[in-house]
Length: 110
Length: 119
Image (cartoon, rainbow over all chains, first blue to last red; front, side, top):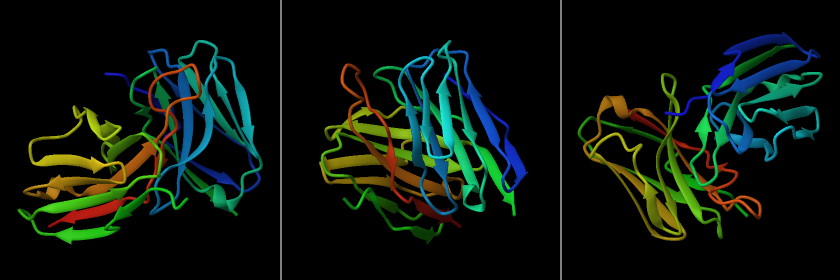
């Protein structure tokens, strides 16, 4: 079946540092989404990308839809303690269900 | 809007018991999804509905699992009989259609989840 490879699996960074994570697939997707999950909560949508090459920002977060449509990355600038959580990428082909990556666990040292 | 509402938030039960998880979706969102999350397997789609009709139940693990959506404002996921390996967090999620010109479910909005422990 379709699989998304999300990396890194986990990160432990210093407050103020920038963070970068990505998702790759052997399949082409038409939509890429990035979610964040806080402990004890459901995933919350951060950014949605609908076009190859699209670069979208949401505050300190920036995500890009890869030009090949097989990958996407998420950057977080100047990390703060509340950025802690699990970040998931998700890809979708038209008319199909979302496929989720395994998640990147982010820990921030203050 | 209150968002997706799930109940119970936590359930502890014994093996063999019936478990019913409930979801009240966001009004007007046509797609409803049931996901299961575990450390080992991550987020797994169990089943999804469009306009109350089950579209894809290929992710339902076995016959012990069933889901219904009797109307647009309520869905249930039932496990009977429950087993320890069913222990997980179960999420209900909603979406509407993708932006115009596209087909299929769009951005998912998740509930807070129901944490199930089967002893």
